[in-house]
Image 1 (cartoon, rainbow, N blue to C red):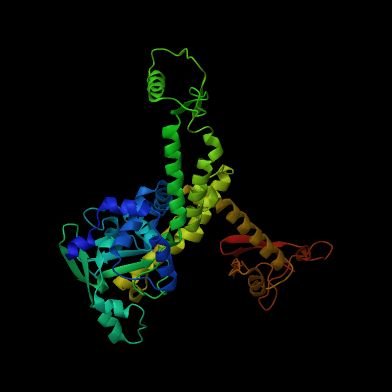
Image 2 (image 1 turned 30 degrees about the horizontal axis):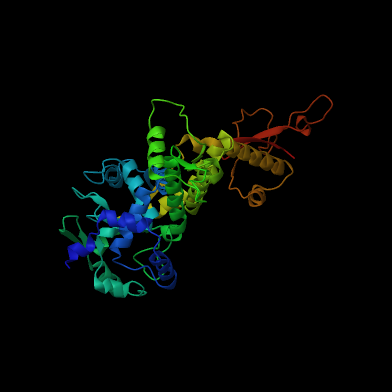
Length: 461
């Protein structure tokens, strides 16, 4: 058998394999736990892709996650200031001739990352090189060299070993059997879980843990499909004995006659010699609770990928505000770490750390991210009030910052120039006197001071 025929498994057989109840899948689960993440599992990788694209519950979770991630905005910063004309921004806006938008590129990353590991092929390590291109690869079409299989769990402590791995040749096989070969160093790899389970170049997939859940979802859909198809069909039988026999049933002629009459629409009432019993194939579909079962499987799949219940909308959701907060929290705790990990890969690939540049991604521009703006503003206001109270009590700005966890600085008010009036001998200012001889400054007079742009009223004493 040729390599090409071994690699390309018929799509129909993959579907049948996925829908089957063979014990080999349970054996695979044992292999995942007992062994390591292996290379060159073309059939397994293609099967995972088929599972996602053929099951509505899994595909809904993938699309929801990818849609949210694709709304991110990539930026490049240096000294915490945005660089508007950085060449990486132009590259990510048009990474290749078939992916001409940044949002689609981000969408594709999250899709492949959710499958386990995303492999981004970058043609050149020089970011602004003319015709530089970036593509995501299908893991089912990547052929890893034998020497990399031996090195997959080896720890590297020197530059020589790392250089050897970077120079290893990776083969990418197209659907027509032709191949593309490139050095390993052209790959930017991002793992969904971890790369420390026995293969530093490939991470495990959450789909391995979700196989039974996805299978249950398939069974639920199959059961609903069968029940709906049979909901319009009936079982018709006689409850009278035929002749002297104790056998209950009908002759072939009677069966054919009843079938012909039931299927016709000419009349709605048919006179019969004896009563017959009519029963639906499906008496009560609601009792099966198939929709609840399907939603339950969908919720489990979504929660495995860290998506909150209100974002999934698998059940009756709470208020709109809570939904917006759930989306914002999902971005903060799930998508942002993934995005930073993804951007860090390109930082290192293009040598941005040596240039003191930072590639980052943010969702702060989205409306639902503003749901925390009011709470943040109120917290800042409370912090300023507490700082003002501490300074009024005579606490130093250093002690107040330490107590509040802030970094405020006091800007002393500028002294106004004096015209010579009211100055005492020795150049010291004379405090104005009242008729009673009391100094006007004896009354408590507030002094305006700025604290990081805020003007605070602090008592003189």
